[in-house]
Image (cartoon, rainbow, N blue to C red; front, top):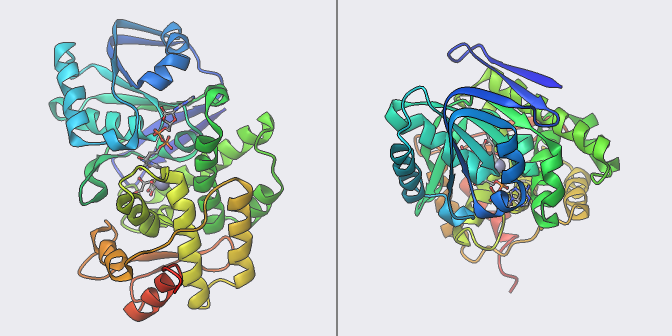
Length: 350
Ligand SMILES: NC(=O)c1ccc[n+]([C@@H]2O[C@H](COP(=O)([O-])OP(=O)(O)OC[C@H]3O[C@@H](n4cnc5c(N)ncnc54)[C@H](O)[C@@H]3O)[C@@H](O)[C@H]2O)c1
Ligand SMILES: O=C(O)C(=O)C[C@@H](O)[C@H](O)[C@H](O)COP(=O)(O)O
Ligand SMILES: [Zn+2]
């Protein structure tokens, strides 16, 4: 199955997203595969048996969100020079979202830009990170604060890679799936409530639906001038949770799950979401073994962090909130006292 993505409002970019068994891929150029030891250990042999290239090299970088840094990107760039890549060469991101974001960013700056393709191996990267061209790294100020919009030439999603994924990582992917349902599609949310994700056909259907929703959004707004910001539901709060805990306590998807619960509490406070709807989202997340609790130690500090969010502009924070199940509202005018009251409800209980 191929989901074509046409970024008509961008630079007339079109690429195919294939959701199927990985095909044989032939490249009339030099190729570097970027991966990490975990993914390589399970799947590199399979990948390499599917690729024919003029020259094929593998660059392995350390595993983990903590390595999603400019330093690692520089190491990948150095390897590209060592392997004498030129402007016609190709990078292949083979791994989860961390590998995809860094490989895409490296491709965007190597000799001012070379091609790359995404072969995502986590649920989260198959349903979200591999599509849409957000690339980049974290720094001490926050998540993904350095990067570029840079589209891959193709995305190959093979659900078979997920067989070796640890359950906690699988659950993290479900958080981004729930995100899309709550924002855009009530029926999809109800479908997810009834779904058994361990069923192969259900999983394929969920991957397809999520990718279609993401492509539909990115098609309209590649560079997040409008609707694309809705994909950030749960992230305004979640990124602060990730940053406060040094990217070591929570996986990205877990922090997004916590962030959605916080955003929902704000939406309930503003009368946009009923308590029942907020409870239904929380139950779905908890049934998927995702965390939904977090103790905010310093509400003022947590709030200050919002100003580093890329959606904040001219001193105002943009919150992405549910507005009834399957609908969203972007709000830049929420009173500080209202937000802090909600944050306080996640504060340490006296
Ligand atoms: N660009 C985007 O649009 C976008 C969207 C969502 C998330 N992200 C980013 O993606 C990152 C999170 O991605 P992630 O959840 O894939 O995390 P990840 O890339 O850290 O991968 C999770 C873990 O699973 C391992 N792994 C990967 N594939 C495996 C497999 N098939 N079998 C066994 N283990 C495997 C990895 O080595 C890693 O330890 C975050 O940095 C987040 O900011 C980007
Ligand atoms: O593709 C998007 O747009 C998203 O927001 C997808 C998110 O799941 C992803 O985590 C993204 O990296 C967050 O965007 P950011 O701009 O806040 O870094
Ligand atoms: Zn995300």
